[in-house]
Length: 271
Image (cartoon, rainbow, N blue to C red; front, side):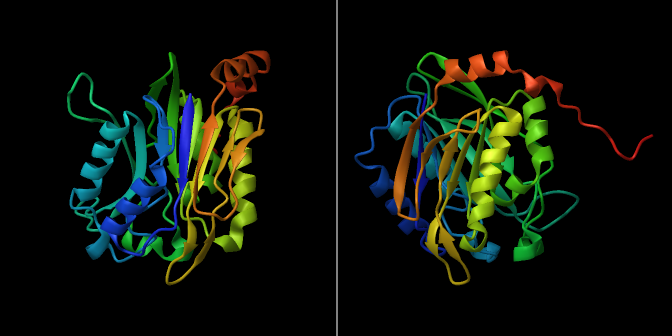
């Protein structure tokens, strides 16, 4: 199984420019039917709190669906969705949206819609965004293999309990799409590797590069296997990282050393 992690220099609040940039970066990349393509958090706008301007009116969702169909691949990208709908809340939600190509000429299929559970309050995200309420998974099939994938977004990577809940739901691979600032780049790499080791799962973590009006980003997109070994990694360049996931070796490791089965989620409020 192969994944392509698109480390993008996002154009601030310019949806059309970002679509064009992604298409240009993928042009010439050997994306095969069934591959997984990952785009960063809020890839269509950058990490903007201007949700009135950046909330998706359906344009980004439709573009992701079309890209999945054009490539014959599963595509995940981040977008802002306005109006969370929880008890009349008017805040936005920060989404990872996943499409698969249509089957036999049918429409592209929405595989998963994950709303970021942990808004980055230190960066004021909580002022404009509300956290999601559900850990999600989807089934990724390619080359006669299949993996259950749990999507996460940026700041989520600091919260191992989310990943453990994903593991309990059958996750064999995690994705983290991000706008993770350069100031804490060492944390990004360490946490991505830790999430893979502790869950004995693949971790595919794609970060943006470049600058927005407020922050600098150093890329560091990374793919990690279930033992914590690095499958592939980028520096701070704008590039596509293509990696091969050895699924039989992953299953053999989980069978040989099944620590993943022994996790216990306890409610500390009860005695």
